[in-house]
Amino acid sequence: MKKIFIKIMAISVALILFNSCQDMNHPAYSDYKKDSNPVGGPLKFYVAFDGTTDNPLMNAVDSIRANFATANAATAIDGISGKGIQGAVGKFVTYAKPNDFAGTMGSFTVSFWEKHDGQTKNNALTNGPEYPFSFVAVADYHWSSSNFMLMLEGSNTACAVKMVVADGLSADGKASAADTWLTWEGAGAVAGLLDNQWHHCAFVYDQSTSTLTFYKDGVSLGTRTWGTHGAIKLVDAKIASVRIGCGPQGAASDVSDNWLASTWKGGLDQFRFYGTALTAAEVSALFTNKL
Image 1: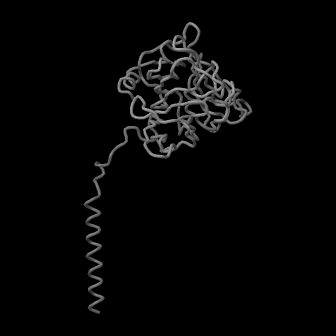
Image 2 (image 1 turned 45 degrees about the vertical axis):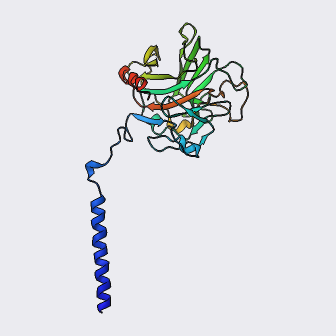
Image 3 (image 1 turned 60 degrees about the vertical axis):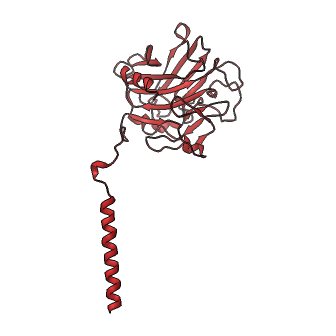
């Protein structure tokens, strides 16, 4: 009985010490680190490409919901801040979804840094467009195989910038109900984007005015209007995947001149999708702070 009593006492003392240690090491509620952009905040998807592991999928993880890439064939390079990625023929990053970006937007902002040396080219390496990003649509939703994409085409002297948006559902619930091209081309083509230097690009759509504003290095290059379209309504169920550094068609092995399968053949860094229209000051802060 004495031995049993001693064992019980020893166990009791151990439990008291354990619980005391637990209480001492447990921070008060107010001491927890707070997320400046919690889940549900305006920033819906953010990839800094700053991972330093041997796993390329971990190096391209989205920071908002720990959304890992499903494929990453891009090469890590020095970015505008930390690491970035270098695209090439067949080299891009794929994600299953853009988190809740599609289901919560109306207005939006797309922000990223790019570095490209001269003329854009297709995957056969003749002149053609290249894509910083595209959303791949499910079959038969849109002729382009995309819900949302951005292409750059041209030289450093004159680069056409074209954003295509397809949203809503047709009467039969299968195809897109509306789509548009919002472009800076012809006399509005942009100089100085492809000079092999890092440049910040931000595209801000304001549903209250149905306008898309393009900012290069914090400076507005004008707006384009989608009539009276209002809120953008990307259909999440119609998004099959998200590509950073590639158009919406073709596989990584596609080396054809298909203009919708072309990959980005430069650097990319700090990719962000916001479900809101940033102000000019907020865009300027992203550029100034290299975010």
